[in-house]
Length: 297
Image 1 (cartoon, rainbow, N blue to C red):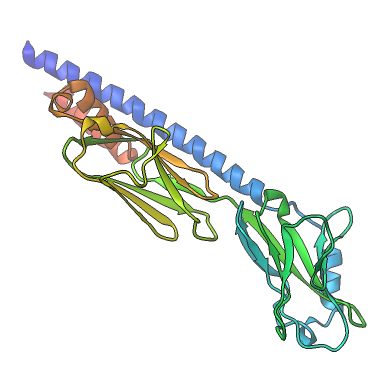
Image 2 (image 1 turned 180 degrees about the horizontal axis):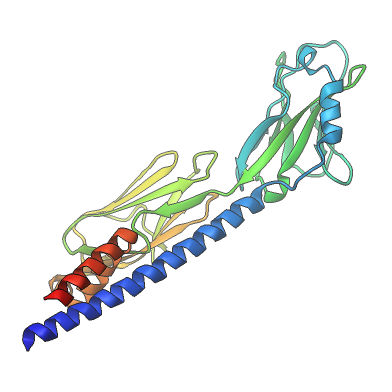
């Protein structure tokens, strides 16, 4: 009788885990579609290249410009974009930057002067330098598009630079929940995706309080990686841990520090098992095989 009851309980747990696997798979598929739609939304709107291409063909860029025509620059939201324009030495003429859009071109800079009332734009040019780079600070999503570097020779000659915008996103391995035994070391890895420049800083929070400089906390940060380490954990260190890089969407993970009583709790064990088993279709095959084996006994 006890054996039948035990098998019944195991079957119920298997059914629960199968349902959770299916729901997690559906949620991951839904999140993936949302990310794809989000990435597509960052692409600049389609534009008519017919007039642009005609300018490409009519102008003799190679005799004037050192920068390749139709170059693409990618910058992240909140970061700094530098659009290159290297020009061969010339005695006359002025270098200008123009924003191309569907309505009418917008003159951004003329020579070293900024022509529009937007101090995010400036020209970077050193004395005796061939570079007339357009620098755009605090990049916004709406800045995506085509930019023209023009030299007012006879005839006027131009090259075109496409600026694409991305959004940096932080990701934490093992999120949204980590279960760890009291007395062991906590190690949280936060990776930066879709970034075009290193973050100026990465702040770590536990329950909305910054902990970078707390005793016992070690933070190691690289260009696209930040690692949080805490030794000798105790249950008081449980909570919501957030990785917050500069100019990036933050990521968080819920850390559960388990003492010996919680480790022996069947509910906690079942929760941990469900997290381990949320890794793909192979787990569903394993669960179904276990179900069949129990049914044949």
